[in-house]
Image (cartoon, rainbow, N blue to C red; front, side, top):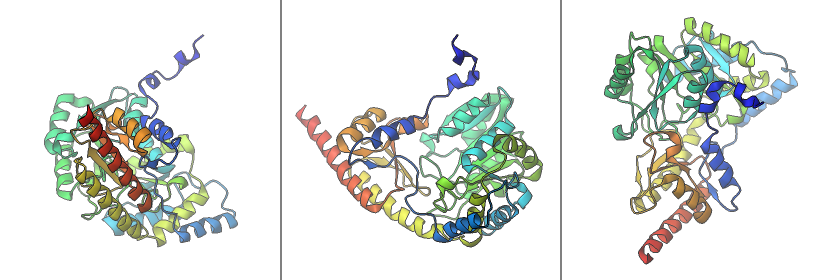
Length: 394
């Protein structure tokens, strides 16, 4: 008996992460400079660490309320209002096991089998996998010709083409993998397309504190009633391993979303919630020094890429650079990335791993030290010179 035949039939359509496979491959290469994973190299702020220690000492080792402690949800409510003008009452906020669980909860709560979800690409593959597991159909919209942004025209055309089965559109800004974000006017124009249609907007704003060139814009300001907001402390406070996300929506929606959350994880760890409450309550500006450093790192990488003839859109947020391989070099991005890792000792993720529009691109995460970035750019420059010299000999 082939027991795997009796698993969820959707699993055959979900492939293991190419990004993680590449990162694991690169990690085994000595002296490589790793630009693969979006893992901040900063430490969690000391006052947040101390809050966790106090929580342990106070024996906060029991179940928290399923939707989150009152302190954390209140602090999250205050933080979102003060920072971004996003007004959610504590009862409209669910504390999740990272933004990852928040995304899963939202998608599973909304979709029925056969429902369609519009996902602008290049994108982080998690959304595609979750939609597939939920029995939905990912509709991948290539945005490479529109500066990696979903335009109102693209959105309207896609909705018209796909018909009434469209149930959700996913927006991630600032974006992983491109670092591109939207202005408020651009989001308002998308809201005009979606308004009064039975379509939810899933807005992943986990990088909201890492906007470089403008205040953070949000669809929640003009389409609150149809928007499910995802955020958290992973990127803003260098707390990826603490696994605290926030799922925010009008109460009529969170009352329903909480059902999937309750029956998936029950609740997140109480000690972690106490730490996150401290982060949002007394660390509203903790991200500022990190953001300043990220900008410096971005500019060093951009300078090198431009010098080498790579075509790169300047990231306006997050900590990723999405760059098009110089035209005189190998254009198969996967082949290029694996050879760059093995021969050049620089690990950058193939752009095609992020969906349509990603061919011929690489994604570099600059969530690593300036010293490593400097070393990595030196090695990248040498690799490109060697490849060009080799081409001339041939």
